[in-house]
Every structure is written in C-alpha cells, then in structure tokens.
Length: 260
Ligand SMILES: Cc1cc2nc3c(=O)[nH]c(=O)nc-3n(C[C@H](O)[C@H](O)[C@H](O)COP(=O)(O)O)c2cc1C
Ligand code: SF4
Ligand code: SF4
Image (cartoon, rainbow, N blue to C red; front, side, top):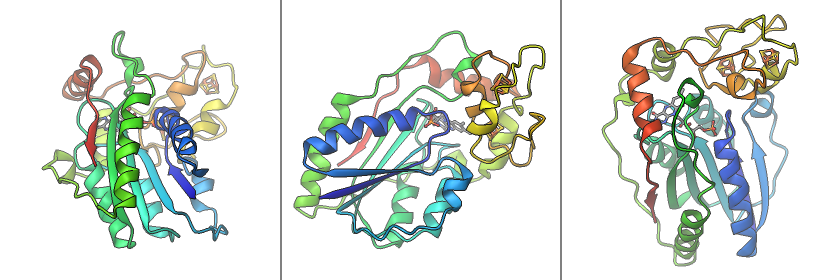
C-alpha cells in the first residue's frame, strides 16, 4: 500500500507532525512518500509523478482560521491520483476555525473521500514574541489513536463529515488579516551575520538579496524569524487586539480536534 503526505509548513511544526505520521503509517504496512510544497519553486514544479496512492494525506497549518491560501491554490491546481484522503492540520491553540471543512471541500471536489481529519495544537508561529507558552510534543498518542480509527474507516468505506464552523476568517481575506496582525519582520542590521537562511526559508520568495522584504509578497508566516539563529528578525504585532488573541492561544493548552 502506498501513501503520499503532501504538506506545507513554514515554521516546521506541521513537518514534525508529518515525520511522526511516517512512523505510524509504516507500522501499518504503508510505503510513504513525502512532498514538501512549502517553497514556491516546489509548488510551481510540474507533477511528473503518476503513481496511484492508496491514501493521500494533506497537512498544513491553520492561517486566519482557514487553510493557507497559497496551499489551497496549490491543491486546486494539481491532480491527485488517489481516492482516499486524510486531513491533518496544526493550529496555534487559538481556533482551528474552518480549516478542516474547507480542506475537505477542496478534496471532495477532486473526487476524494475523506476518512479522517485532525487539527493538532502546536507551537504558534508567533511564539517568539512572548516569553511564555506551551511547547507541544509531536502528539504520538493522539496520532496513533487517530490513524487506528481513520484507517479502519478506509477499510469499511465509512466517510467522515466535517462540521463547518462560523469563523471570522470567512469574512476577511487572509492577506488582509495577516497584514493587520504582524509587521513585516524587518532585519536588525547590527545583529545580522548575512547567513541568508531567512531568504532560503521564505515560502513566497519575499526577501531580496539585500534582505529587504516585499510587504506585498509577505504572508507573515514568521519562517524568517524562526530560522534566524541570531534573532536578527522578530515578530512585532501591529495592534494590541491581535497580540491578545495570539497570547490567548499561546497561554492555554489547546486540544486536538478530531473527526473519525
Ligand atoms: C498568518 C498566520 C495565521 C494564523 N492563524 C491561526 C489561527 O487562526 N488559529 C490558530 O490557532 N493558529 C493560527 N496560527 C498559528 C499556526 O496555525 C500554528 O502555529 C501552526 O502550527 C504553524 O505551522 P507550521 O509550523 O507548520 O508553519 C497562525 C499562524 C500564522 C503564521
Ligand atoms: S537569517 Fe538572520 S542572520 Fe541570517 S541573513 Fe537572515 S536576518 Fe541575517
Ligand atoms: S518574509 Fe514574510 S513570507 Fe517570507 S518568511 Fe518572512 S514572514 Fe514569511
């Protein structure tokens, strides 16, 4: 049996969960391929892989209570050679909003059946702006239980219905919400050692060779902040309300949201 995990993960929490899923799926006899489409070049690459997958998993972080726009655009564009899907998401313990149901709608349109969906609380992308907060593990136990049920659903052809929530994120564009939440993470020149790691980590190629960021291309994912080892980039909130909302997620221990 073959499984593909296709994921988007700028600050790598989702990626860490994906690595954990590989071990679990292998224990069920799956051969697992991973496709990281975080970087723009990888999302734009032509798909020359025609393997049929018994299971297709998509994994992504919740952005403004939804699936990240650039990942949903990618999913709309590609053809998926599978009938069975599982949805995995990570969120910063504020709310998963409508991310799971939105992802399910995209996959259903492509004639995939959904046999399980999970949103796992993870480190918030903007955690570095705070002194405190939970550091989550990779949710081994929750994932093991989730996959036991979801794989059983595939065997018995029992599709899951994912509840749709009323979410603020439905009424404003993600670009607008991200733009009013966080400043573009400018470089602190005195600290920068010119390693260029931030340029390489950016999923939208928003950082130029002089380390300046195009505000228009920046999706405020904070990958450049997290990857910088000398703290030459930082998360700075644009307003007090956004800071309070993110702090709420960082200070409480969120729970997995599961559909099986
Ligand atoms: C632009 C942006 C919007 C976010 N919106 C939400 C949200 O609506 N609810 C939430 O709980 N977490 C939110 N988060 C936090 C991420 O979902 C969470 O940190 C996720 O684990 C990051 O995944 P990654 O490390 O794979 O990039 C947001 C993060 C970013 C960067
Ligand atoms: S990652 Fe940090 S130190 Fe490296 S170039 Fe970017 S800002 Fe400078
Ligand atoms: S420049 Fe913007 S889009 Fe690029 S890594 Fe930094 S926060 Fe993310």
